Image (cartoon, rainbow over all chains, first blue to last red; front, side):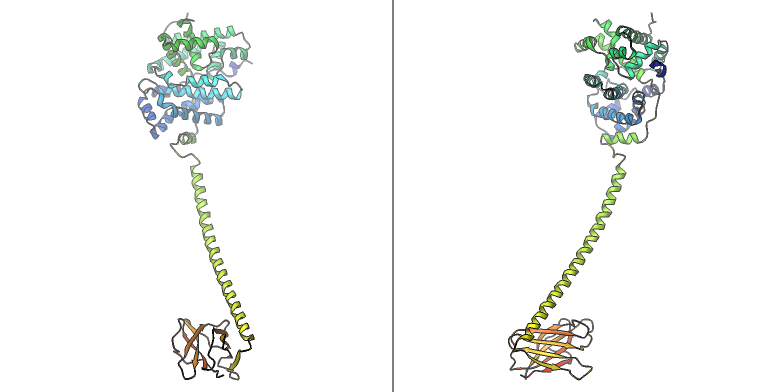
Amino acid sequence: MLLWKILPLAFTFGLLEILLRFKDDAELARRLKAREPHAMSDLYDRYGRIAFSLIYRIVRNTAATEDLVQETFLRVWNRAQSFDQQRGSLGPWVLTVARNRAIDYLRSIDGRMSAGSMELDRLENPALFSDFEDSALSMDRTRRLKSAFEKLSPNQRMVIELAYFEGLSQTEMAERMKQPLGTVKTWVRSALKALREELSGVAIA
Amino acid sequence: MNCEELKDLYELYALGVLDGEEKDEADAHLARGCETCRKSLNDALAINTILLASSPSVAPPRRLKHRVMASVGVERSGWGWAAALAAACMLVVALWLSVQERHRATELADARRTLMQISAQRDSMQQALNFLNQPETQQVGFGKGQPAPPRGNVFVNPRSGVLLISSNLPRLDPGKVFEMWLIPKGGAPRPAGLFQPTAPGSAYHMLSGPVDVSTLGVVAVTVEPEAGSAAPTTTPIIAVQVGF
């Protein structure tokens, strides 16, 4: 049985609505940088559910999820000083940290550590999110992405699932799916291109 | 690879799953401040954010917030109540131990006091025995044949002093003691020490030191206030003629 038949990538809006609700959190970012105790409470109230849901989706273990959510917020708290409150967006950053903590956990129990852990660490740098435009997130764009996603083939959905929620590289996907690397790369690129073009309003060729 | 080719890779790059030459190329473009690639990365972050946030919503347990807050030192952990309970228990135990310790200290002090009393009595009896064994010691009895008054003996040793051994003594009122007097012939009574019964109705009392037996006329005992008196204030209950 192919994995995508038992793990279809679901597309729900619950978390997205939360994310969109709190796009403008420059003031919260400022308070986090100032180490205001209530800022951490507010940050958790905004993004605790998102982090928990995403991590649980990846690790499928409640106890491990709780550990990783704690680690996520500890990282955000410790790195908030580097966050650009004028330009950055907290939600995508918290989401990325949460996803990376979960992937790092999966890799550790699979014995797939090594350089990957450092790479994830590097990609959590708040500076990467300093030019993130809030306008990139909207319910309209989200619906369009969902629409494009539903048009993907099972293989394309599968590689998206493996990349986003299992943290596999294209080489690892090829091994997992027992497919040639070139074929996997084609699925990945075509899937992402379809999503990208749907978001930018360009019709898929 | 040019920027257009790299554009297809930034979602994977931002996820940390791009490897080999492709990752190196993306790093190089971003490192040199390539604006096109920077924009591609931002677009990729948006797609990644939406896809990651498309996960089903699951409510975290309530305790998790306390745990998170505790981990950054903003709030006590969920085990704070346990720590408080443990501290309260330790306080109770410490108080109990303190009371027990104080109780033990009191018992120890009582035992030490009793031991000292016994030791003093033993020394006193040993002293009395030595006194009695000395050949110079002379004995005078009193009260024989009379049922009510005190009975006993007075022992006088010119070098060692005077020893009184008595029974059938009257009961002392609270705050009262017996006081022994040495009354020279034709002189005023001189205080010779305070004592209390060693057992109901019985007592012995010794005045240590040389005694001029040639002038000593009477050994007497009166009941006096517990601080003693400079001169008898009551009628003697014992008055023994010791003219040697």
